[in-house]
Image (cartoon, rainbow, N blue to C red; front, top):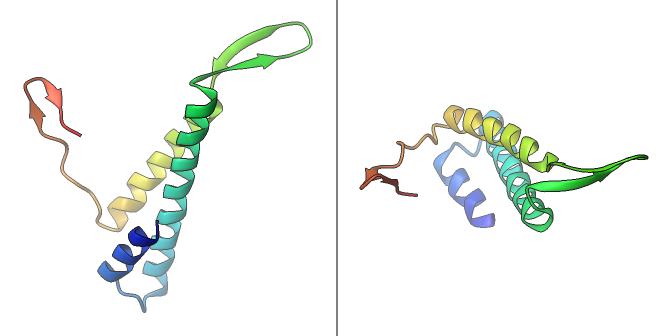
Length: 96
């Protein structure tokens, strides 16, 4: 994460408080995004919920939060001009 922060600040004007805030916000959201990944890996995509009379499975709430964070990262990335072209298709498979 320190390397990402250094790379970001090299690209943008360090003296601009607005740019610095945007970069810090982006990096904070990125850290949260990866923490949610860890939570999903540990608990799975479905979690067991117990109430007074029943036990049932429901989607891990971290997935919905990750989607919200992802949308924020995309919007902030566009504002910071971080948008990348879509991955190239090759033999029916998407390259990542």
